[in-house]
Length: 232
Image 1: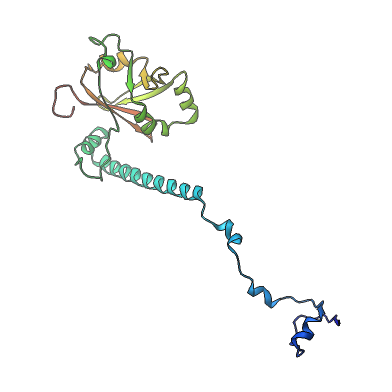
Image 2: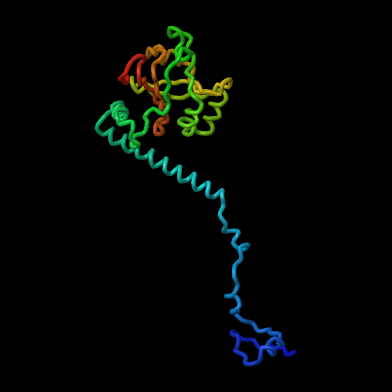
């Protein structure tokens, strides 16, 4: 067997027969091997680029969040335009009067409740708390609170500012998760600051929405019991 020890930058075209080439052991040093272009990637080589279900789920979540933020920004822009012409109270009333069957308008009061005897007490006495549905609170309030505040709400309770849209007044209540039922309650001065002051009665429809800019919970009496029209 012949051993070729030539050192070159390219492989010369040899005229030897195929049998002669196979009998040679080449030690040539080349910068390029033509056989490299013939290598084909197998399915195993592409495992790193295979679809990742977790990545797809994350992308879907990001898309949903982007759509939500876009819609919220559109509503914020609408309110900003209304505030140029109207006061804050009037702007909310304008949104309230908008067509309810149109997707262009977002419900101004995502948290609504028809007051019960437990909420207002008998003859406005012994009404120590307002009970709110857990599902609505987790969807429309908790996402806007910090982890520290949520931890306090879930345990000993946290102070929360509430703006009465109808009277343009600000109040302070304790926001807490009621461990027995798992619902959320507004307590402390609820009876004095809202039931007595606003003359709330069983059957009144009230609403809440979170103001993400002022970090305050906005309250309104939407409709009085027995009335067919929104409260002024």
